[in-house]
Image: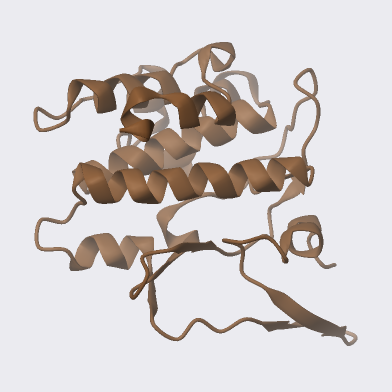
Length: 208
């Protein structure tokens, strides 16, 4: 079955384009955009001399990720598997393209929840671990916080479920105070205290 995100969001900027699709008895065959000079964000970070990005470059990437997810939300879609391996970096323009919509879903209202988790364990939100349910927007903001930390530190903030629920967040000395504040807000244990996408774009660090 063609994923809902692929169907609804393919025409959006920052989303991998699907031009056509076919099916046979065993498979769906997607005809997709081919980006010729790109790396996924995981390899892009690995290829830097320091293993992480400057705050200026991380800001540029984070702004794009928020705008992409906000555009998807306005189409009624959440990705649900944001991670560095699912983000392509155009090496010429440093524009980002989001791929792999196999876990995407229609975004439910703030009072409705998902009970199925898709993705990598280090990106799980604490509410899924403790309650086995999560809302689309707050969990996406959590994941954006994990990605931002990864971009500026070169490593993920949490390695285990115990780290996540215990909020064993170590903010590195080289981070600016404004960046630390943004990461702490994205990674708030209480999902109701995390910012909206619009609020993220108004944060002082993002607007700097």
